[in-house]
Length: 352
Image (cartoon, rainbow, N blue to C red; front, side, top):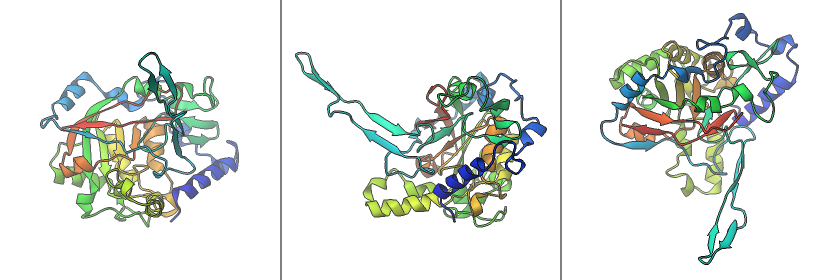
């Protein structure tokens, strides 16, 4: 099984191997299937979060019955697992950074963070994160290309995460407990098959909804998957491990992951959800040769995000919700308004 450090290198090599004109390196489905304009029009920059209405917000608020709060983010730290060559480094300049000032001798500290800020730890994938190499260029959500005016290495302009952040997410959260369904943590998939126990299919989603006794998944919902893979890197005990144990767990976490197969992703898209999330690093299954239910790596990313504007939250801590069997809850979160960024860190909140 390739680690996702190796996978990142393979993806980069595939892109670098030829330009948009190299037929073997293009996928024109976004053009021939007319993925753009989106259902919200050619000027839309926010995606499926547009489905949120005052009525859906008020309905979601009524799910708060016990007054409990769960924070779903994990701790950002230099020793946490990260995709490819991504890393996190935090330093406190000066110690203290400034002061003393005035007669009371005030001092203060700042922090300097060096990281891929939108794509590290608990992370949100926005409009500028996932695209498709087509014969007309690098295609992103709603028919935008990396060569468009206003899109540059200094910021992605109309693809920036701030456009989603203007809306924010207030929705009915749905927890799908695949660990309960399978009778234990799901394994990394070995085959491109709906029968592989590490791949969660559309039928599995229907069965979990039925077993958990919750209302069917519907428009405006935010859907979260518990696979058990996230327990390899769990915030409650991570700092108790020594460096060798952490390194072993990072390698195990990065080696692949159970998750949604493409049939489940298409099922959720048909029900017009607005967000997916999970306790692992890609939400979808990453198994044999980095594929899932099909051989294509990250097929759900393409079909949900690039095609439909249904965004993604990765590396969530769902343990409190699982322990309380809180399968429906009020979910509240917004990306940071980082102009032109691909995504955002954050600490989402579930209330129930």
